Length: 534
Image (cartoon, rainbow, N blue to C red; front, top):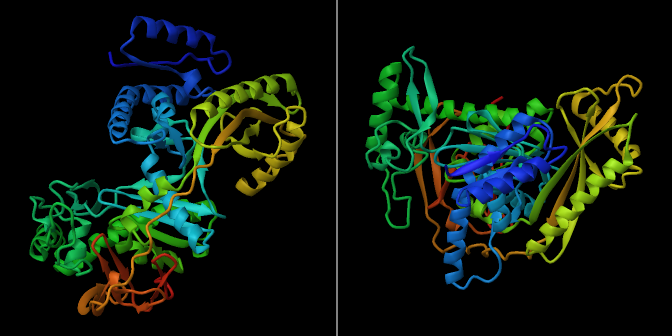
């Protein structure tokens, strides 16, 4: 046995039995990682609490061992200060806290990408943005509204396993540079979710991969040129012949079309998946994508951003200075946050202020202990409440609190809950019809980290490299003469007119016909788009 999770049905009300069971387990099985639900997620909903605790136990031994080893290595390199870990809520936590609650870090990578995109948006004065983080295997899409990322109280891991920890709201789909295009037995084309991965990789890498990917399609359409584009230990010269052979054999021959049309179809399928994800995050939530800027990053995000923006009517694309490092930079620019919760179940009709006071005191004690472990100079607290109509099974509405005084809490919550229902669902029940229930009291411990100095904007080098070659344009459904521009040659305020492809060793940006780009801020590229395709 490597790990053990303890979850009793009513431990969210009284955790004593779980704590005793945990003590016995740790005494009898000292080498086994163990945890109890009352310490991980002490709130109602037995299945979600159990699944979160099980995930926590599954990851616990692995993460604790990894972090201990990493701390040892860093200490050997004279690291000063404690080690911090990014968690799914888009903030930092100490390594000690992460070892105790490893389920909190499952979504840390995508969350860091959103926070990196948010940092770019703030530098450029954009309050409403859609972030597109597209790498080799997947695309992560999220939304920032009024300068803040959307959060959700839980998220689902693979196989729809719920993890009940606050998380940045990100939708992830199988759409990346290595995503494989394929045709099923009925002759229907598909894009992913299978991926060629880094090994063997896309066919154009000539490392053994033979199946067609989005990268191969971009090479066939000359959106990615054959010059070497990967640095580091090795450079890979893309092979147009290998890309064409993969597209022709697996797609064009099966569909009875040209290699060009097959490659365009591969990219349209991938773009359609991402467009549906953008709609899920915006239109289906009552948000108009035309009111947002699109921040595109990752190795492949800048290749596909214009196609998505034109289809959705998004007027502007922002390409960060270092598109491949946005997630890493995001992790360097965020503050500490730990979340705590207590279930109280108090209704407006039968409100017990003493019970709420006990929950508040317990949260204060837990935060005081956590604050001593965190390296931030100052700690602040944000309070929220999960509310619902009495009798609802779930459907919480999380309300921010200006005051958490138990004596006046319901007076503040009730009108805010009704206003929130009107805003979220376009209706609210009369107070005479449905009682309001305070289900959970939440506290977030916030610690501000010292600012990090980011690398200076690279200076444009002399002798700009520009070339003109034919590249496939979806707007014309054919090849058109396109200017290829070395991004390193662009000076601040310099503009480029589309159609163009802006190249850099870590990313390639497609600028569609009629669009206009300019270099701003610390080297970010802003693309103003013409009227979309509809």
